[in-house]
Length: 184
Image (cartoon, rainbow, N blue to C red; front, side, top):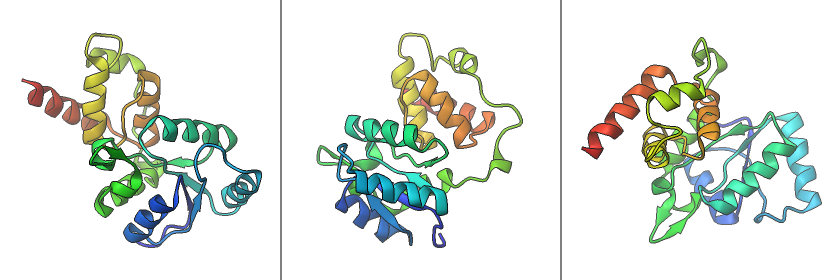
């Protein structure tokens, strides 16, 4: 992967080290949820001048940091790792991910808009596949999200990620079929 123009926003120094092992990019570290005014100003400058990619850990704290940053910077690109990709000996964080997983997550975040499906995937389509509104929907979403490299979340967040990452209906169906087959 070539140098990434956008600045990656991550949680900690260990995450920054893992990102720099995987790609050539600038990184801003939030140092957790209590992001200082100085760091917010730095992120805002990067957002306006180069664009940013929010890349937080796939845990509760990472989700809260992502929500806070996305609210402040709604046009930010989003990179996601699944929990299994970011877990080592019970510790969850980007610092535990293999460089290849980090690169895949960033490639999805940087996917060009031209690759987007003609019509966005709708939440109702998730329900038809058993990915929303039914028993076992959350665990199935987690498995499909893992296969697609976009994480899980609730149905609304999942459909948003499918569309943000330009996942085609064909890719979604293949990941769903593979997940269902594995469950048998």
